[in-house]
Image 1 (cartoon, rainbow, N blue to C red):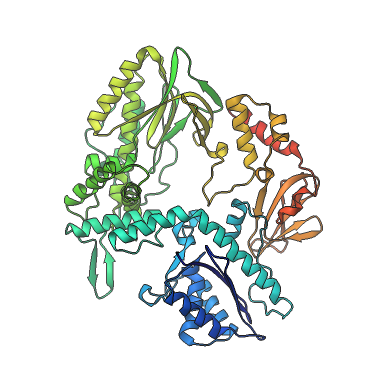
Image 2: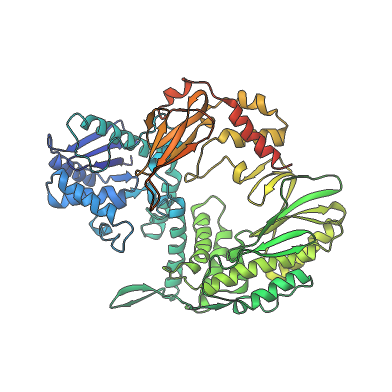
Length: 611
């Protein structure tokens, strides 16, 4: 049996507690270091026991926080809580500085293997940053508990049991998330065994990039230079980029709007690769193609479109469009030889040889996408912003070339353009002509389009819509999506779920909302930083709180510190004009009835926005 031990530490000025659970056996551990008891030696013996039994320690940000604190205790042999608290503060205060790595424990020094769910899920990326409390909400935990005492507090003996209960709760919730993450852990175990390299705490993107680096170096293409400063990534840094150098010379248009945009792009020289132009638009046949350095987009808005006997909604896209474009056009970072292109193309060939769902297929897909994404990462061995521009600009222009040719079909109408493909309403009588134009584009670009047919689309805008496939499957985007990733807000899912029932299946709004069986779908959440607080009626709620709109509920407000130069605290209403029932303990969910009117209004907004 795998000895996976889930653990969590809490550090205060005069107290450290550690709570742990076995993943598969009914075993729990509890330790403290405080003025009233010092379990230093017991903790050290426990860690050594785990080590001798080939256990693994599972945590949430344990590589960045819990284990460095624990490792400090192991090295000292004995410690008081104040010393370990000081270590914890050094770690926290170094997170945004250049010395943020100095507290990391070298892999060779780690006494018990660590698996960090925070890293595996890439929550250490600012765009995906997610706390364990947010996960408790998203996992629909019966209880959501925030830190019971302010950081730095010197605790009394009476407060210690409260902290221990909180610590045990966090360990239990980390264990729940461990089981949600088992497929990801098994994937990393398989790769680690096969390639004899530790992938266990890699996020998905890092797995792909590291595999590609392995393949490059195996083929004799070094990705790092070594010198007095240690290992440095090979890169191509550019003070400026003439976009004409990025755009394929053979791209040309007949339409004057596309031609105008192309000519303008060819004249530009940029020094940044983000936010350079935001309003470059080509309006063709009444449809706006909006260009950006990252990708193209455009859409009809506030409209419901349905396939008929005369017209059919067709969606075409290229799988892994940007990596596929790089392979087809042999784009590469300038620091590498042409062999780079061959190895990169080989990843795609290898991927096709493995069935979808296998670890090899998943890893190779990550390798393809990760290398492209890192062409604009100044810390990566793939860094060359010209390559980024080559892929993204040509990707947009090639899609416009396809759209231009397709719009010669009588009666064809553009519906959407979005990064890797197009959605169109096509007269059924011209489908052969449609297919011939797509085939000619595939031959020109060395890319392969995938085609799907929709029976109906409900479109608010390019980022928010429902598309129903001919086989009945449903594609959801933005406000209409309810199958969320873990880093996203899972609040108020009843709104998107009922909206789908109304739009796709013709269900009545009010009856569907009022009869919805899952109370968790009505739950919402809000949060404020530790410098602020939440006021619920006359009471203070915890900084991360779960609630629902309730009849007879009390108003909920955020109190935020004064802005610079001001003295008054800011009071911001949450769900202004409505009362709520806070229920961080799910037992409180039945205290007041749900106010269905708020949810009905939100469903109505989503439905009306596609009409």
